[in-house]
Length: 136
Image 1 (cartoon, rainbow, N blue to C red):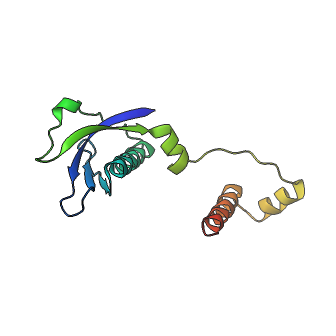
Image 2 (image 1 turned 90 degrees about the vertical axis):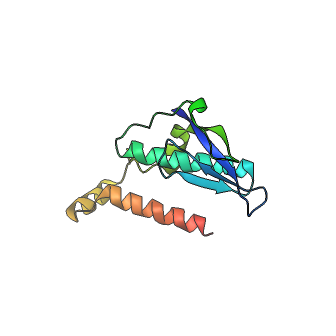
Image 3 (image 1 turned 45 degrees about the horizontal axis):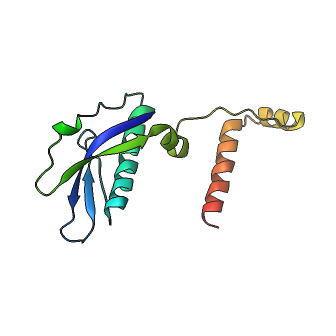
């Protein structure tokens, strides 16, 4: 699912070339970057995270205001952010994904006799491997 939201960009008076980004349709969604390009990327990331939280809570994505209805404060300008929610959710989503696995019968018997949660063990192991790779 692709979504678009108008965003207000404001030059940072203290840091030359830096911008703050505010997404009016997403309350509290504020970001920024050291350059305009970085501010666009960071604004898109912040907005995507904001919307993903709503979707994972079972709420719909907020309606976007028409671009022409957004009036920035003095010195700012409005541009659109494009969110690729499918790609963002695939990378950062908390939604559980069903996976099938095959293990030896003796290991299955052991796990069942010891009330081991297969999903939790796999998740814990993969998380540990992920963290290990991140620090390598």
